[in-house]
Length: 125
Image 1 (cartoon, rainbow, N blue to C red):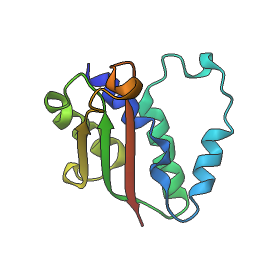
Image 2: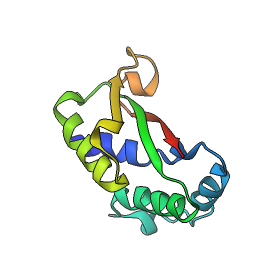
Image 3: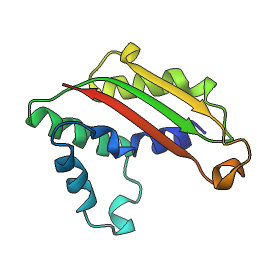
Image 4: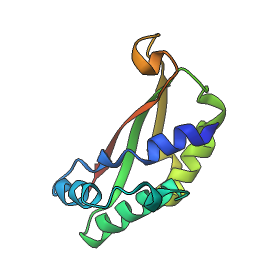
């Protein structure tokens, strides 16, 4: 079940809100949207590509703060493995990654258990 959370978090491409962030957003937004292109693709590939583009422009991710919105599954049992995977992928210490979760208290699609959402902020220097 942790893959539900990790996919949502890894696909939060807008973690690149920093100087020149439009370069990254436009890159991903201009990719073909054919479902077959992304079928069975590791969500980490998008994150690896983002980190590579940052490095090519002289930037690096310093830390990451994220929050996941979902009714289920519970995040607790998966938090450590998610932090470890993100840290390894982004080449930063796992202590520089904060992952929180909350529910939507029964409101909307998320609250009814029909979806999940993620918000993420990264410090980039």
